[in-house]
Image 1 (cartoon, rainbow, N blue to C red):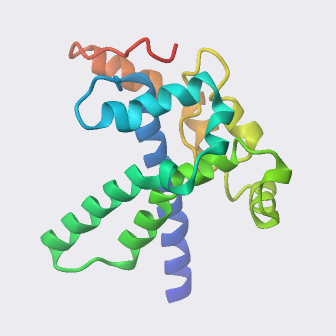
Image 2 (cartoon, rainbow, N blue to C red; image 1 turned 45 degrees about the horizontal axis):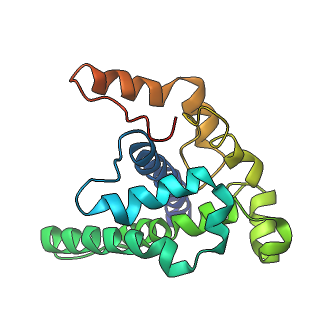
Length: 182
C-alpha cells in the first residue's frame, strides 16, 4: 500500500512539475519583457533568442541553461525550510527535476544522434517530451504547448484553450500579452 501511495505521488508530482514548466514558459513567452529587472536579461532575452533560433539551445552548456532554475529552486527550498523546518522528499523531487527542466527542453531540440541512448528511449516511451511534441510550440503563432517536460498535458490544455483563457482573464484586469514572440 505504501509503495502504491508513493507511486501515485511521484506521478502526480511529475504532472505538477510539467504543468509548472508550462506556467513559467507561458509567462516568459507571453508576458516577459527583456527590460524587466532581474529576469529581463537573464531569462527573457535568452528565451527570445531561443524562439528566433530554437536549435541554438542545443549548443548551450548545462549551467547556461539551468542556472536560473537552480536559483529558483534554491529560493523555493529555502522558503519551505524556513516555513516548515524541514524539506520533504516531494519538495526535493520537484526541485531537482524542475531545476533541470531546460535540459529536458534542450533534448526536445536535439537530434537522436546528439543525445544519450537512455534519453532517446525515455522520449520514445513518452516519459519525457519528444522533439515532435515540442515542435508544436514553435509552430506560428507559438501560442500553445508550453509544458516542456512530458507529452501528456499539452494536448489537453491546448484542447480546452487553457492558455487563451488565462490571457482573457488577465486582460480583464488590463494585463495584456507582449508581442515579443508573436
